[in-house]
Image (tube, rainbow, N blue to C red; front, top):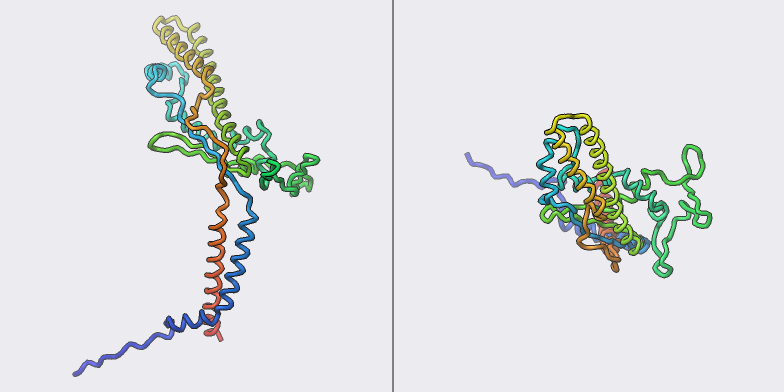
Length: 312
């Protein structure tokens, strides 16, 4: 019995490369036209985007875990816990807390309110280099009357932007990151005006330093008051000695905080006014827009040829 070799039959669904090329060639006018339209639109869109500038500063945690004060805190930490007070977390924990606070809603809201940044944060659309002034969205804010024009969907009246909207807008412009190897922290702000970007970085760092120092002083004063009361209550000499040591440690912490403007972070490399824009990447926008137009036009030509022809 002889085996009969059967040649495989080509599938009807297979696409011949020559046929594919001929289909694309036949639709070349459509492909070129659509690609050109996308290219022109991409260029117009890229040119309409306002320049943005990024200012950055590098800071390091201000406290060293190897200091004598830190060593004393470690030695007395257990006794402080027994006494019912908190003498403070370690350097690493305090640094992480400060970084989280810097990106929190409450801190950013207070930062915006304190420095009156509502208009530049929410209503700015660009920067006029000639006059060194911000361009504002007239639909959001009336600069002449200094009134917000945001319509409240419930009441229909004009109102200022919400706290959440301000937080989201500002948070999208600020970045706080730490290098795992060196421990250094990068704080950057991206904005339309290079001068304002630099100012905001400086303000942001000084504000978190002030916040962490004030929080530490409040904690220390509360601990000293508590320990003073406990000394008056106890007659045990050893316990009184422990309380006096804790008060001494808390007093040193208070002196350190009061004498340290850069309480949480010490500036390693201060922010400078950027001279080159960081965004937009106009060439990339144009290239991606043109490629998108080319791919969509090719896809349309192929779908029209193979899908629609079979449907008919």
